[in-house]
Length: 434
Image (cartoon, rainbow, N blue to C red):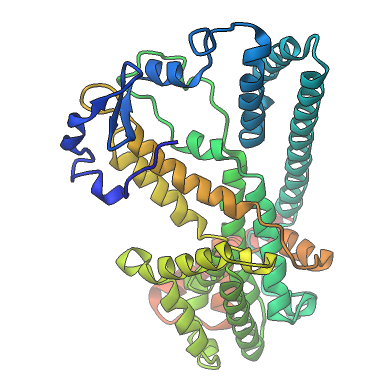
C-alpha cells in the first residue's frame, strides 16, 4: 500500500495542499499520485483499482478469481465483523461464499472456517451486550438519586479492596474488555456526515449505532461518579481522607500500568466540585502525589504532558516482551476528540471533487493504532468480587453528591446554603413518597 507522508506537511491552513495538483496520473484512470503516494481520485476509480474484474484476470474462471475474493472476505469479516449483524449483509455473504465453495473442497473448508469464526464473534458480542444491559439495569435499580447521609457505612471501596495495585489491575480488566468490543466501524459511524457533493442519498441512510463506543464513554463517567461517591459518603473526615489517599495511589498505579483512561476518570472524580470543596478533608491529605498526577494529565498545551507519556507507553508496548508491558489504554475522550477534529478540519474531497485519500490515510492510522491497543490480553487475575462492586455499586447523582458534601462540611456562603436547603427539601419529599 502507498505510504502516507507526515501529516503536518500535507496541508496548509485550509486543509489542502495546492502542490498536490502537480500529481502524476498513473496506470489507473482517475487516480492521482504524488511521490508514489496515492493522494486523490474518484470513488469509481478506487473501486476499479481494488475490485477484481475480468480485465484483471484474463482467465475469467471462478477458480482464478476465487482466492482473491476469499481473501478479501476473510479480511473483511475479521476486521469489520459487526457489518454482518445486518441480515442483508449476512445474506449476501452466504450467497457469495456458496458460489465460491461449490465444487471445490479446499474453498469449502476455508469458507466454513471463516463463517464459523464470524458467527463466534457475533455471538460473543451479543452475549457481552446482554451482560452489559443486565449490569446497567442493576445499577439503575439501585441508583441513589437523593438520600440522607448514612450514619454508618455498611460497605465501601476500602472494605472490598484495600490494595491500590489490585484495584488498578481490576480497572484495567474492565477497560480492556470494553475496548475489545469497539469495532473500527464505530468510529466511522460516530463521525460520518452526509457529503454535500455526494448525490447518493442511500450512502449513510442506514448506519449502525456506535453502541459499544458509547458504553465505553459511559463507563468513564460511572467511574468518575463512583470515585466522588466513595469520597463523599463517609461521615468521618479521617475516613474521607483515607479514601482520597487510596484513590491517589490507585491512579498512580493506573499510570504505571499504562491505563490512562482510568487515571483520568479518577482525577475527574476527585476534581468534582462536591469533592474539591471539602477543604477540611483535603487538609488531612498528602497531596504531593496527586499534584504530580494532575501535572501529567494537565490539559494545557493540548495535553502535552499526557501525549508525551502516551508516546512512551506506546514505545514500551512495541518493544515489550510481556503482556504487562504491552498495555496502552488511551484517554478515550481525547482520542475521539482528536479523530473528530481531524475529520472536521480537513476536507473529504478536493476542490476538483475527488476523494482526499491523504485525510483518510491519517484517520486510518489513528484508528489502527487504537485497534492494536485493544487487542492486548489483560495479564492480571480477575477478582469477581471487586469487579462486581466497580460495575454495580450505587453511585450518587450530582445533586446527591452536593447534599452529601454539605452534610460532611457545611455550606460556606449564602449560595451554598440556599442549595443545601433546596436539596434537603427535595430529599424529604422523596422520603415521604417512599
